[in-house]
Structure formats: C-alpha cells, structure tokens
Amino acid sequence: MDQLSLIQKLAVWVMPVLLAITVHEVAHGWVALRLGDRTALMLGRLTLNPVKHIDPFGTVLLPALLLLMGGFVFGWAKPVPITWENLRHPKRDMALVALAGPSANLLMAILWLLAVKLGIAVMGASPWLGQPLIYMGVAGVYINAILMVLNLLPLPPLDGGRIVAGLLPGPLAWQYNRIEPYGMLIILALFFTRLLGEIMGPLISGFFLVLFYLGHLPAGLFQSVLQAII
Image (cartoon, rainbow, N blue to C red; front, side, top):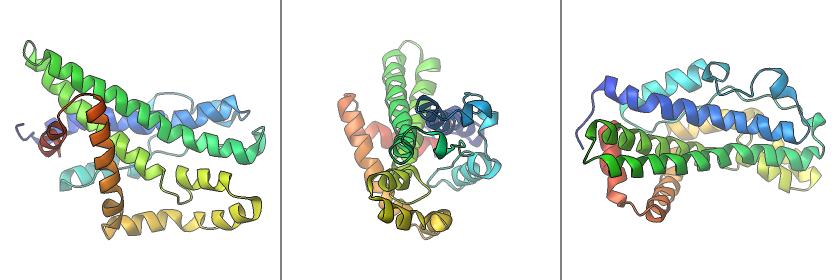
C-alpha cells in the first residue's frame, strides 16, 4: 500500500474516530435510559451529533498529535452523565451501562471489517471506491479495537473498572472505587512510559487476528494498510 499524505490520513481517520467515540458514549446513555436514568436524554447526549460529545483535548488534539507522530492513536469524548440513583438496580445497572460502551465498539469493529471486505470486492472494478473503503475500514477496526481494549482495563474510571466494581461485594467495591480520582493520571503515566502500549498491543493484535480470521481476510492486509495510514 502507498504511504498517504497528511491530508489523506486525516480524511481516512476523521469519520472512524468520531463514530467510535460518539457511538461509545451514546451506548452508555441509551442503556442507562433503558434501565431508568433519563439524565443523558434530558441533557441532549443521546445523539450521534459528534459536537455534543467532543472533548477538545481527548477527541481532537491528542489523536491528531499522535497521528502526526505516527504512533499509538487513541482518545476519548466527554463522558455521558449517569445519575446512578435513578437506576433500578444501581450497582448491577452501572456495570451494564459500563459494558455498553465496549460492546458498541465491538459491533462497530465488525461493521468496519465488512467495509474492508466490500472494498476488496469492488477494488478491481472501482478502485476509487474500494481503496478508501479498505483504508477507512482498517482505521475503523483499529480505533474501535483500541477503545474497546482500553476501556475494558480494570481501572476506574474506565468501563472495565466500573464492571469490576459491579461484580465485587459492597465493601470491596467501595475500596476499589477509591482509585478513581487517580485513574486518569495512572493511564497517562502508563501511556507516556509506553507501558500502556505494551499491555494493549498484544490484546489488540490478538483481536485483529481473530476478527480477520473470522472474516476470511489475510492478516497481513491489516499491517500493510496500517503502515500506509499512520
């Protein structure tokens, strides 16, 4: 695959990144609504309009800088507000609300994989359509894999931390949640010391191998396309 220019890279990544982050947050709010909390709905956060979910640093600046540096791309949106007291079974339901985000990323990764397959199918007849679909499809699988794996790490305030807290007995859950004020600092420290990449790298690669195997796609395709778009 030919190396893309900076403008072409941005064109490839914008839609997958915005969709990955936006749908992740909407999934949290939608599940919370189904379980009795209308906070996200009342604040206008149950929308696919990315403007409602963009965090200037986490959604725009950080992913753009990482893309320019040619490294590990990730980001976040403004968290959807959840009023846990409104949930019918607060402890259990908070875990279900947390699980909704990574589940949405898994679904989107599968849909982007289908875009890759469609791009390959039409490449011969319509390369002007097939190549962008392959590039954006791989970018979509990649960013959703990152968000899914990152958010499932068992560290509050990540979704994985909330899932663990929902499974622990009350006193242990309370002690465990005391980590939350320091959670983002721990994540940033892991990122800048490259430990986060070492933890997540094998998990993301394994996810790709399984997904591409199930989709009957060559594993080498992911690496060659990723080298072109990062």
